[in-house]
Amino acid sequence: MNKIFHPYTPFSAIEKGFLNIARGEGIYLFDDAGNKYVDIVSSWWAVALGHGHPKVVKAIQEQAAVLQHSITGSLTHPSVLALAERLAELMPTPDRHSVFASDGCSAVEAALKIAIQYWYNVGQPDKTWIIGMDQGYHGDSMGALGAGFVDDFHKPFERAVSHPAKLPFPIPTAEDPDGFLPSKAVIERHKNTLAAVIVEPLCLGSAGMKIYSAGYLKQLAYCCAENDVLLIIDEVAMGFGRTGKRFAFNHADIDPDIVCVGKALTAGYMPLSAAIVKDELYDTFSDAGETDHTFYHGNTFAGHPIGCAAALAALDIYEAEDTVERGAEMAEKMKDWMQPFAEMDCVKELRFLGMIGVVELKPETKPLIAKMKQSLFEQGYLFRPLGTMFYLMPPLIISDDELRGAVFALQQTIEEFC
Ligand code: PLP
Image 1 (cartoon, protein in one colour):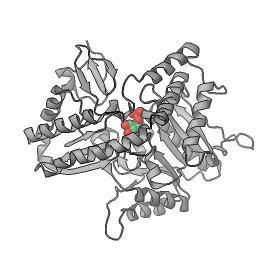
Image 2 (tube, protein in one colour):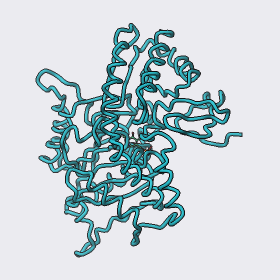
Image 3 (tube, helix red, strand yellow):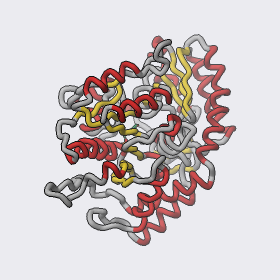
Image 4 (spheres, helix red, strand yellow):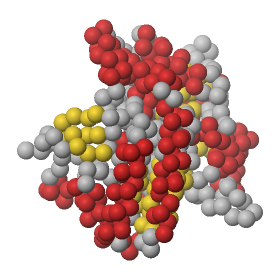
C-alpha cells in the first residue's frame, strides 16, 4: 500500500502505478525488477555526477562514521567550516558568509529574509518587497511563492501570498536587444520599497526552460546597484556547470549580493543548500550596537556534517574531472545532434543553454505528449515533459554514445507520433 503523498504527481498517475527504483549507477536508475532507465533529467536536475560516484559515497561513509549531526547555532565543525570557505572562494569576490539549509527553497527563504533584514539593519525598514520574474520558480515554500510564481503549479495559493510586482520575461526588440527596459521601469518605479530582486539566471527552468540573455542579467545587476536594490541570483538549478560555466551568472560577469545553491552542490547525494552572502550585508547582522541585529533564522539541519562532506567531495570532483569544461563540450555536440529536430513539422522551437537541450512541440501535440513519454519510458528513458516541451538535462558525465542514444530515441519517438 502506497502511503506517500507524492510531490508533483496527479492521482491518475498513482492509480497507474509507477517504478520502484532500487539503485542507481552512472546515468542509470534500476527498478526492483532490474530494468534500467536513463535518468535524462538528472533526478530533478541534481545528480550532475551521475549515481554512485565512489568518491562522494566514500566521503559520506567516512563522515557518517565520525560525526553524523551537530548544530551550527553557536557551534561549528570541520566540514561546514571547510565548505563555507570553499563556497566563498568560488564567488567573484570571496568576502562572503554562507547560511546553510537543506533544500533549495530553504536557501531561497534565507536569502529573502537576509535581504529584508539587511535594509532593516541599516535603517531602511520600508524596503521589504522582493520581486522576481514573471513565471519564475524558486521553490514551493510560501516566501518562494511570493517571489516566483508558476501559474500551472501555484494557482491555489494566489491569494495567500503577496505579489507586489513582477519583472516581465525579457522580449528582445531592435531598440532593446536584451529586453531589459520593461524590467528597468519596474525596478525604478518601486525602488523605495524594494529590498531585492531574485531571478533564475539565464533560464526559467520550471516555467518551461525559457532562456534569456546574459546581457539582460548584466543590465539587471547594474540597475539594481544604481537603485539600491539587492540582487539575489538563484543558482539552485543552474549552478555547478549546467550552463557551460560554473555558475550561470558567470556568463554575465557579475557579482551578485546573494547566491543560492542547492541540488548539484552535493551532486544530489545529500539534501544541502546555501545562501552565499556578501560580507557588506553580513556585517550589518551584529548585536554590538544598541539594537540586536542577530539573524534569528535557522534550520535544524543547517550545515549538516554528512551533507557538507558530500558537497566537499562533489566540489573536488568537479575540479579534478573538469566536469564543467567537459559538460560545455558535450553541450556543443548535443546541439549539433539535435539540429534535425528543427526540420520536423510539429516542432515549434529548439532552445539550448549548456547541457540543457529543449524541443518545444506545437500546442496541437498536447494530446500526444503522455503517449510519447510512455513510449520513451518503454525504451528506457525517464523524460519529464513540461507542457508540450521535452528537454534533456542529463548528468554532466554522460558519454557521447549515451547522449547520442537519448537524442536519437527522442527524435524517433517524435517522428513516430507526430
Ligand atoms: N530554485 C530553483 C531555480 C529551482 O529550480 C528549484 C527547484 O527546482 C528550487 C529553487 C527549489 O529547490 P528545492 O526543490 O530543493 O526546494
